[in-house]
Image (cartoon, rainbow, N blue to C red; front, side, top):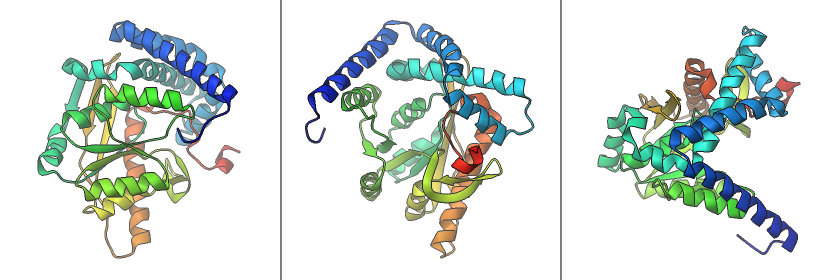
Length: 300
């Protein structure tokens, strides 16, 4: 933490962090499947009561205009259950990763090759199912990897999150923004890899289609990929049943290098958006629908 927060603000942070610790601690006391089931049950009932449910419904209208209202509601019920499971499983990823029967990995040899060759790579994905599981698989492959993250507003909660991730081997983090970009570039120059989720709205990003509607996407992964051989390594995760997952390491995305950097970045972003869209279409209940992905005017 930089500087010293006012007493009342610091006290509020500490109380919030204590509640967060109680929440994660209670779930760690339970068997994995029980914790996951309880999380699903809770958020399936609580999620639809908030304003973000309306955002999620509008997102589904944009992505699947042909879908009937009842089907959207059913799908969102499944999404809330998925999100509840993910929240409940957050403090349990070390135990999930240690149980090989819970993680099926397709294309694992692609990650193993990156590790064996010490090849600096840019791994990209989105907020599918429990996205924390992908980081555990990267670690299992033996890849030294910088994982981007957005720090929690509460610094004590942020420290708890970092410690939780360290339990399953993720110990390198790069904050988002300008400082993070410099850290990622430095990591690639050292021969390390970087992993980024590239499926959320990024104001000022590259305008590219997503479900046929223009949105703005962070160009960072594509820029990094162009600097490291013109390849992105996409990954995804599907929830199979309960707290069991299939992580897929897909065919690499080859980036165009025509000499027109602006056009090449745009083409790369379009490929990333197409990859994410294809995964969402395969299992829409697995994606995190509760954030505003498209421009504000689209929601109007």
